[in-house]
Length: 488
Image 1 (tube, rainbow, N blue to C red):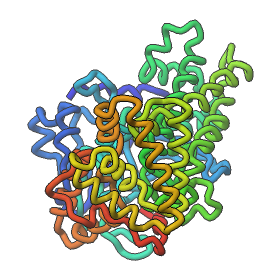
Image 2: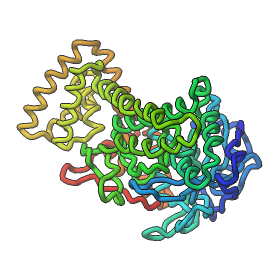
Image 3: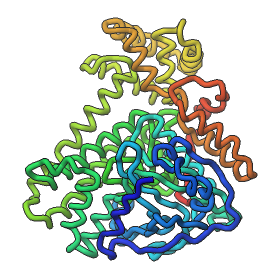
Image 4: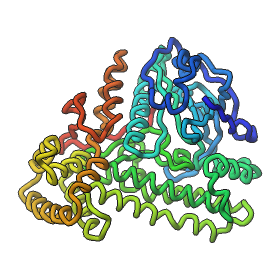
């Protein structure tokens, strides 16, 4: 691998150097060959031979420089003060095969000075959920952290019950969060200029060509964040805990806790059982992204030339970027061109899904069975199942809408419409039930289901022989999708 350990060259107030605390008797859980190939890990005999020992904290290669990052954040809208890597370590930074920076971050690495009341460990269930979700989002084409692999161990960890300790080697283009700047502003304001230069030079070097590099950098972060959240909305993904310490400066999905993929469409679904007010529901994510950036940006007024007016200009593109990306994506999911008539049909379709609590993923995919039934027998079955759930009144709404929709499709290229629908509407997402079946088997020492789900999610837009009916089954309409615990 091509190491580029630059974070450790920054001021030592920003981190704490330490090795990981090893897990007891580690065993392989799953290994991501695709990520290993992209990193150059797979070509290094030492790394490949010792990957279980490395991920379990038992062995630290000489080119690794493990450290825990300090950062702060707003959690559920309230200032939380100093936070930091309480159970994770930035183990190394490298350039991948595309010359892009990538962080190797070990989650479950043991206590750090920032652990607060935690134990520094991760449990198997949350490790598997994060491992599969990072993989799922990446294969769906959504900017996200991924993972090299995870291990299981004999280390026992207490949560609501005694659980199995595990560790995950997370890979992300950056682990710098909005909360890093919040920490600097509160505890080391003299570092803001140099840290901003580091963020620009490392992650946004193109901004150096601007007449105002800092403003260009801030605008780029705003726009990337808006596009990421638009991608979440399009695929039906709810992050669940959009605190400022959980949003990356690169607009990549980070920190999988109580996440969920929308099953039966309910935009107000609370997927985090700790979110008592519904702050982080699916429908609120765009507004929360804006709120977080609005809290983050004023700290840069400490930098010469950055005024309130400059920051207003930096934040201004958020709504337009989000709306354009979301609306274009929504039209592609329907196989329609981006125009007012298409958007009207799209929002009527979403209303139909919500009013009848239909499955989000299956319903979008089922439209292929309407547009080209002879070529898409799987989708035709989805369509029959979907319409069978509709009441007599809803059937009438559906019939009227579908006729106008087909007429709109026929005004353009049906071939292009089918291609757009196939490449923007997955057959498979990581449903909670899928993840739970893999977790239950893994807790019994059987990782075959983890591997099957991993392979299924590797090509989510294709109907696959390894799938079962349970992989695409929505909960019963009278059983709400359950929230997920933050405990991990």
